[in-house]
Length: 106
Image (tube, rainbow, N blue to C red; front, side, top):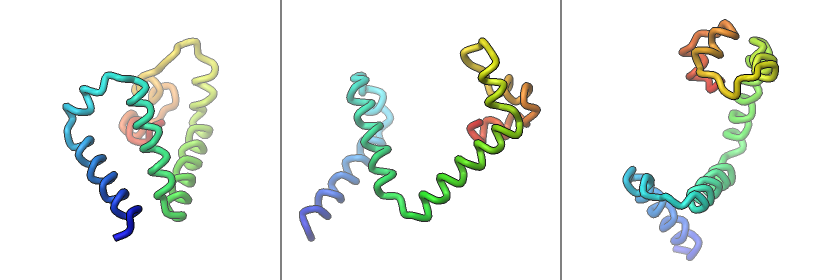
C-alpha cells in the first residue's frame, strides 16, 4: 500500500472514531478547534465529491432558491425587523406546509 493510501485509511478511522462518540464531540469546548474541524470536513467532503454529486448538490440548491423566490421567502425575510423566524412562522407567512418548510431547509 502507498503511504498516501495508509494516511487516508488512518484519517477515515480517526474521523469515524471521533464522530462515533457523541461524548467526545460534546467535550470539544475549543471553538477554534471545532471551527477548524468543521471547515476541514466541509473541504474534504467537497474534494471527495464526484462530478455528478456536485451537479446534484447545485441543482438542489438552485431548486430550493427558486421555490424561495416563488413563495416570496426572501422578500419576507428582507422586509421584516425580526432577526429570526421559526419554521412555523415562515410556513404561515409563505403558505408553505410547515413539515415541508422544515424538511426542505427553507
